[in-house]
Length: 314
Image (tube, rainbow, N blue to C red):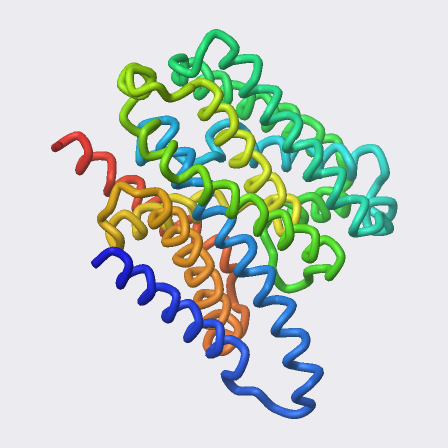
């Protein structure tokens, strides 16, 4: 049954992608298809990376209300963009080459996250609460520092920062996109391979170790893959904090199974379908009158508020 639902999700994603590519297609066909295909690849990459990363992070944290953004990915990205504009100015920021900028941001985010995980989990992966609280505090600190620097910027420079920190899929460079897509494929393959051990890790540290699992090593490896996925997707288009929560919650509802070899692909496909379908709606129906990231954050925030009392009731 779960496998059939996974196949249905794959079919849904294919239909949504076809709709995005072909809806209201006009001449010149080759040019428009090339632009739409590049944007489609970015939407699928970011949506799949965010959905898969959130499923694994929730398993490790043993909490379906959390997303990887809680450890400060978004705050660090905002701080990096603010620091770049503060030091280089608006003109200098605009002249940065997309590929080196993407690689630098992805590397900074990945190193910061893995360092945080390594330092805080060195006493064992049972101390997840301390790691999460430290991530929250660091996120608040980074946003405070970024806010202070933004107050010192010129109005034109501040506008550049505001544009840079909002996720946008309208202009995605092919070089960073290719690297992000390859990284996503490798990370998803690694998570699929880890599926059975993640199933055991979901039982809890004590039970997993009783069954012979090297729990702490599995947790750190999984968190490192989560850091890579979220860092690459954030550096590519910007932060989309609550997309993962939407994708993970819908994946658990669509595929009611504990096996991560089903849940991870389900969340990846749902995350991709949400972004592709949402972008198609905004471009073809609403005429880009709003930003997709803003609506995703709003819907994710509402879902979070709905999930809190539901989990308390359980």
